[in-house]
Image (cartoon, rainbow, N blue to C red; front, side, top):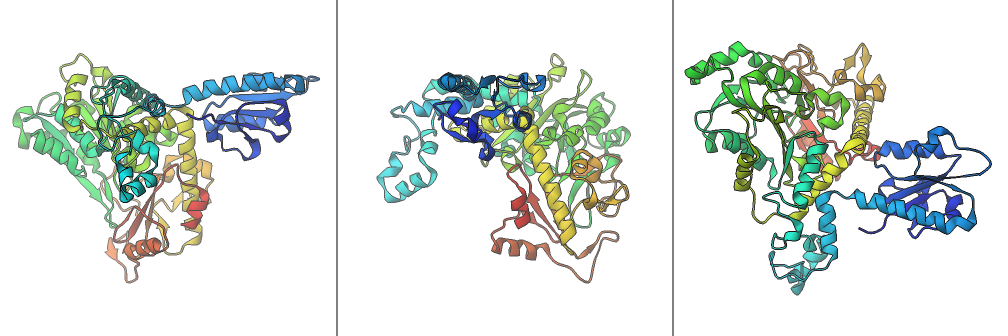
Length: 554
């Protein structure tokens, strides 16, 4: 990778003679720097600012020799310099050395290896046939195609003919290290990168776990890939769980009564009487952790209520995946659950390309089942990987794999929590703007919490209290029926807006209404692209890509 910059106070440049490009600290983008230098006067402010990014950028302080630094500064900087021009070159070398350490550790395993490989400039006589883009440059249309995407995407489109980049199918070398790093970031025992979407991820899990004759507890909201993988390919027998809709037609969660053991065993009697009294009648439960319309499940409740009836639970998290990086969503993250030998094994599939940092088609499977290893119901790596190889291409696109690698790096640790904290704050402010300025369009959140209008509450309070997003049973603003206490909430990162036309208290159409299709077309005509619209609702997906200016334009 190219050398990054050093962010430094303007008045300190002559005291630090670094080989790197320097930028003004006040104007620096901290994603582009590998060292930060400030004076003792501003030390507490900049130490805090750097810490909040979670990037662990090394910091340095320049101070006068006639007074001592405070303990709070001493323990939080990598270097301390004096206002001494005779040592400016020495100080610069020290900054450069530590900056290089930071840069060497910055990139995740696979992307770092891929960048180094491309930099070597190998002569190719292997697949793919464009061989670094050279073929495209033989024709005007191909040349435009090459120039549009840029050289690196072609140079990094490799095959496994050169073993130095490892193997993506049997998980050797840098690909293996990348998936191990992702497992750590997401609190999984193992993670598998999948390059043809969560439709494939679901089928991998379902084909590995299920066989003809197995019972699968099946969420009626499940994506068609779960139908294909569990019911058609694996030949398992479904026991369906009823799901809710509200007057807007929003896709809701499973009805609370469906998690009752007696109710479920009675359903088993209808399709497989011999298993009705089995300790664990279900080989697998397949649950949508989050629906397209932003209903999020409480994973802790799901495991507590039906986990003892299932060998495994697959949480299809195609429309979420970031829940463990947002503290108030902790209980909806299957990966953060403390599990023991009597609990089910857990699989989570995630569409990284939907609201995380992934190219289209990027997906991942998380396996969390170490707590049942050695039991007959345990699914070993070899069995899962056989299913993985059945659904994976033998010609994977390396940039897709690299995107998954970088996504895990970005979300790991404090930096991940910081970027998602910013995202939640931005979308809360956006909801407040709409509530205060729009007459007919309304965010899908409770109108009042604790007797105070939603928009009149402090942003930080909203961002840390799930009550501002919960579906309380019986409340008419959401009008979902059949829910239990603390069972579901609306995803803070899905900006779901409703338009006039439906009375949620009665479920009837009103005399006046604004079909959301009109709003969606108006927005597209003004160069704003929503995710989708239904009859009287419109959805915008919120990610760390958002900022206040972008939301104000909306």
